[in-house]
Amino acid sequence: MADSPKWLKIVVAGFVTGTIMFALAGRERDAPPPRTTAAVPKRLDIPSLQLKAPLMKLGLSSDGEVELPPFEKPATAGWFDQSVVPGDSGASVIIGHVDTKTAPAVFYRLREVRKGAVIKVLRSDGKTAEYKVDSIEQVAKDRFPAERVYVEDGLRLVTCGGVFDRKTHEYLDNIIVYASRLAA
Image 1: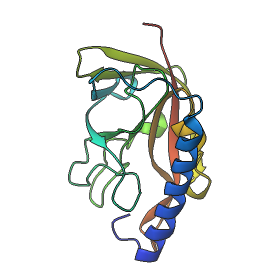
Image 2: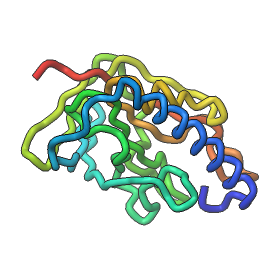
Image 3: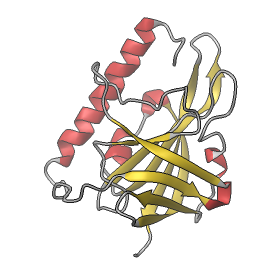
Image 4: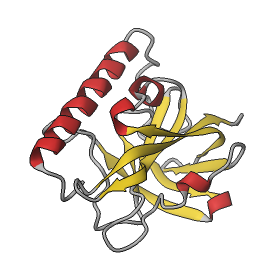
């Protein structure tokens, strides 16, 4: 996204913001109670991919777009802080880059994860939330399933994928992993 034309970023930002706000607004009716813990996710482990990654907090940028981890930290993924803390009831979203201009990034192998694989999220309160992969989806960015990602219960891992458009310097699709919580 770093080298995309400004108009494309504005269009994508507007679309993403609109779908997120729509999804989050719908969540208010049956939203889980507000978070009562100050815990935050600290590390993501996917043993089948031999992936251990620190997590940073991501919010919304001033233009309403979901923040992404900085390209300067390719081994770091980010937890969207307007989603629930992994281990709590509700939708929890973790975002990471697939690559940078020069090397693979944290979610480079995410498309290789298989149904049934275990995902662990270590929290700042010492607890570990464990999930089982239910499905993996590759979807065009202009058809991003915002409600399924940001509202439905479970852990969602999101990265770019599919064909890389050299003109826009963007991947055309997203890879989304859907996982459900394992009993504690």
